Image 1 (spheres, rainbow, N blue to C red):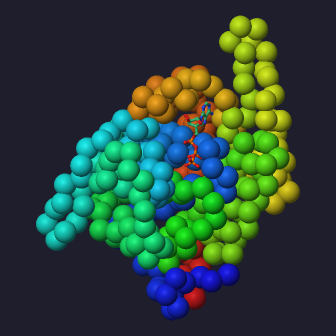
Image 2: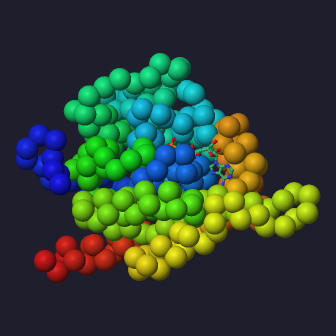
Length: 278
Ligand SMILES: Nc1ncnc2c1ncn2[C@@H]1O[C@H](COP(=O)(O)OP(=O)(O)OP(=O)(O)O)[C@@H](O)[C@H]1O
């Protein structure tokens, strides 16, 4: 696979002050990447970590809506961009800069430039975790990311349906090809609990992501229910994780967040050890 858009691939440079960079991807669209990204970011912040969130879905930026902010970022000295602070998380999205319903029309090199700017020209300060919400598919943005910064790892989201799992496998393969460690898989829209009879309804065939994780010897990070409250939280800019660890909807995201944090920290330590030895 071509690893560079311009012939020679630049060497990735770590971001000073940013301890872990974790991408959230899926392969298939609409499976809940952004929902997971915003709730993980909020959960990690509530757990006391310093958190940033990049909306790398340049063509369909949903993070501003889901984080409940439409502010324009300020330009600081040295042409640096100040991220927007929403629910305790530092956020950047093309949606803050070019709001409204106009589609973003751009070529690959422009996309690459925006991803680089979001990484290097945003005043992130000290961060424990910088999460990157990837667009659907297996393409350009990931290449731009890995060319710009060393990624700590990736989290793959899938619903348990066969079509979603098929695309999740492609995402796993893509991360493998660009040498990004997959920290684990999350099953979203795992099942639905009927509010009337309280029975669990298996809409997308629960358990598929767990099976796939075992097949690929990757950690299964947990499952998130299909729940109208989660959708409502996204649509109103109030991610359910804001309700805290003890809340019925938030709890699932906190469990995933703790695992992601532990695995990312372990992965960063491993990479540091390798660099020190070599
Ligand atoms: N567990 C869930 N329960 C209920 N609704 C959910 C859940 N997860 C996601 N949704 C809803 O499904 C829709 C798609 O989710 P989301 O935008 O997070 O997916 P995505 O993978 O980021 O999509 P895209 O590929 O377009 O970026 C949204 O309306 C979201 O609120």
